[in-house]
Image (cartoon, rainbow, N blue to C red):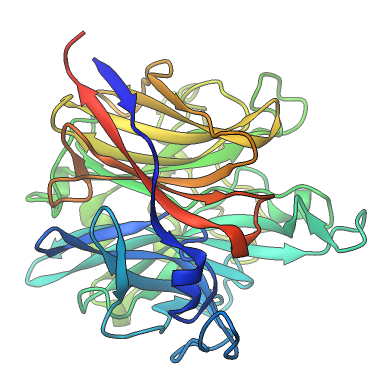
Length: 411
């Protein structure tokens, strides 16, 4: 098995996105994608709609001054424009059901997956939510150049092909509660959630699932062990996974009108290899305030400061590919690391590393299959990511790049 990374090429510049009405992004985070025919795709990602027109571009016509998840179109090589809905958010921050705070200050779309629940078809989207506070130790109140935040992963559902998504609630919460971090100088991210369908042993299954009752929805994210826990993941992000049985997920969200955030919050279980049942730890506390701890977890590999995982099945390798971001020397700049697995739990040592040139800061890696199904790669899936030629997150100089990932099953 071999993996070779090609050279990045620009998919879109910030100037192109600004000309479509965006102040920053998309994507400010992971991408979702669905094939739209003819080698084209609809992409989903977080962004901020421009509040007013400027020299850079117009105001966001449908969502001026609003942050949320948006859609745009293109091939695997270049941006072609917005969808027919134009610059209009699919959902915005604070989209969670009443009383749930995990996305009150930020909501950004992530992985997208088709589903079929009886006669009802639609799309699931994992998304990243944040609760913000001001850093008391800095003049600008920021943490690492962005608002201080406690992250969570929500689930949104579309029944109209992706024109509108509705948040049905939170599915993953960090191990430690909001109260441990709020008011500190530390951000607590869990990523955007990368979805994979497989059976109970991690054997890949195509989406939409033919038999949801024997299918599990695996969601990859990052979590934190507490200070003093020992190892590289103590108080540092490490990649891990949670899962839920797909038929139970679909029963909880279809029909949308009767979905319950309490039911949704109880669906997923974190992987904890130290437990007698490794899938017994709750992925959320079920507490809408985030001030109760959720379940413990086991890192999938012991790389501290590793985060933002993206996973697809690769038909050429007959294995899963995972790319994650890793801080170099415990801080920025960052690299991208590629690994493989046949069961979703046991991952290889790094197969390839993308190290950016000096002065370039890559962020938010997403793997996209090149054969028409974004969730399935072949011999050359694409790796999409934001590049910031100056300090992250300077959007005015950013671009969205893609590079081919050349894979071979041979030695």
